[in-house]
Length: 111
Length: 116
Image (cartoon, rainbow over all chains, first blue to last red; front, side, top):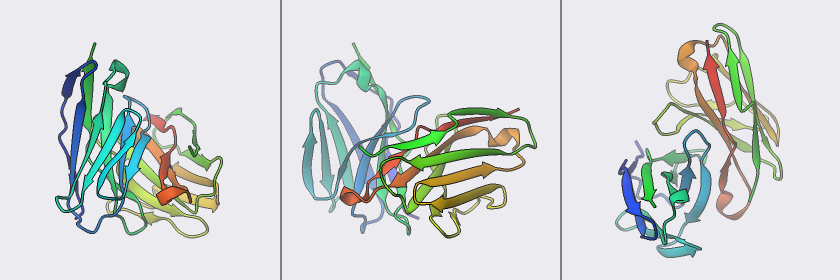
């Protein structure tokens, strides 16, 4: 069974710090990786996706992928209280291209 | 980014009745849509994959006769919860795969179902 693992947290960081969120996946053949943010009671929203080894930057967010280690991370620079949410790591791995989600890491950014 | 609209956002129904949830892709055609369920403080669980013009594929443990899925057009999929029971109360979320970069999957706003 394909799995995606995340530390459930909560991860607490002070405002302005770097938040580091980590994710591992079991299927070595996975090719596409996604980070979603979900506020309480709301639907997930896509932050970014990454396919290639290395770093991908988008504003304050940087996704890092290491396929050899089967590891994906998300860095949030200059964390803001509005970044407080649950961050879901997802891997495209189903037979019909569906996403397999981790359980999410709850991030709390303290003012 | 691509927009997926879901309706209704909240619905309360009586036990034993049926309720329909709609999922629309507003600015792209989606041959495949996915239906998820999320209980409080838990992760999203895939219920079924909806393919336009064909039968949905259900995940193990999901009753296809209870959760009816219809994907009649490239922009609309519906989920009908039949003979709803209180334990079906949950957050139901649809998503659709765009044809854009990497076939990115976008989510609808979700529908809160409460069965009383």
